[in-house]
Image (cartoon, rainbow, N blue to C red; front, top):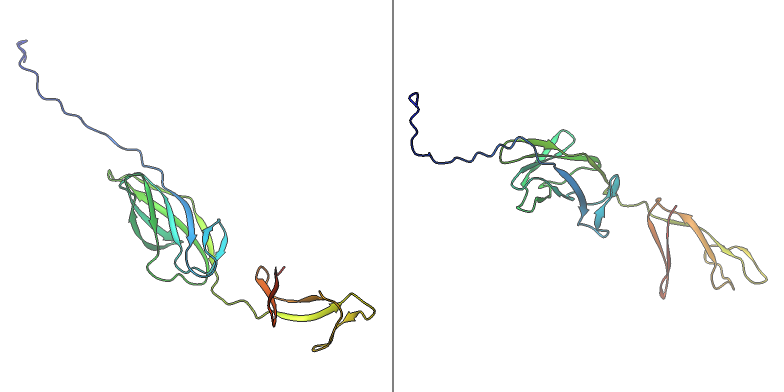
Length: 181
């Protein structure tokens, strides 16, 4: 007091000041539908119209997932800081650029870098066999449709959508497969 008297010590109060936003990141996008599944790299093509988006943020943060300027939804980062989100509606065909914004329990916000994937649900164009080449024996050259050959491994050529897998069969089963260029 002003006279110099001292009283008993009061109770201590601990105040935590948190003004630093936790970093939020998208660490992966996963295709978990269709015949080809697994982790998608940035700029990958997928047939999954609801890919799982995963990442990290400050524990307890509310994470909002965006596709460009469209909000897809929110999730909460667990005690270990990890989160995952799967859209509740199908995303359309084309390019999708995902970002995440996290708001921690103290109200601090941060944003992630983007992760882009392209959704393509179109079936590939039907492949064609345009030629069969006999390059063994006394008679060689292009084979006519329904023709015969003494070549046990004639060379087949044709067209298919780039990147698609073409499988060649005969009456006994699969002969081989190739990725179209």
